[in-house]
Length: 283
Image 1 (cartoon, helix red, strand yellow):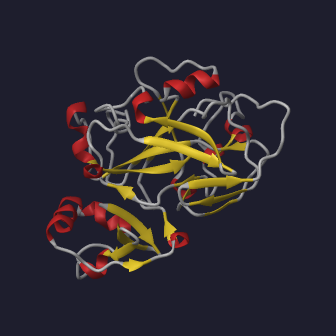
Image 2 (image 1 turned 135 degrees about the vertical axis):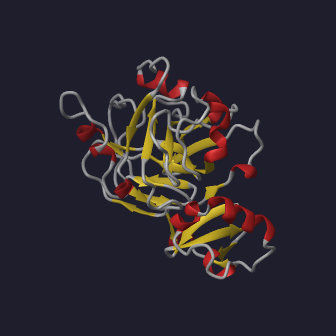
């Protein structure tokens, strides 16, 4: 199944159409997308067994963040070997670097990002969303708690991110609109267990980043990142984990952004010319 937030309401995407979950279920689930996680097992059963419902056409620009208000957002830095190499940094051994983006940065897959300075750049991400509360969960059982995955972007104001001693990441990554996700949260039954997922990003119709989850150094089951690696935290329903960025496509490092306009499935911008690209911080 593919869960989307459309005009503020939870929907299932079905081909070119969308099904309003609250109306189709007679008010049992939704309309708030976050309500689905409070009844995750019952909701999944309803989707599997309730039959076919008519889908209505929708506009992509009306899509919002599929998981609009997660209780926590974890992000994993330097998770892709190729990305670590292009930054000139070595990924930490054992537990990877973990930071957060504030939930107020989350937005949908279409719209305008208002930049905060000349050093804002982009990173395409695979985002995992938790469906059931998890604490002290064995690695072998972790995926039983996952609701699904979605594509995302991690925008960062690098000047703000690297300010301070020591530097802090969260403020420079958490301006409004700096966490676009979607168009949909895709359940795990939509992908084969041994199929790596491809992440790509375009700027001005130029492919600038591309890799697969096979190169994710913390990948579980060879295709997806693990749940956030914080063993003593309670990961409540809706918790999001972004698993670092894919490598640049034949070029490194990525340039800073100029004013952006985001579109479903693609990212477009006007890029400023530069004699040399500055190095990208980790994450």
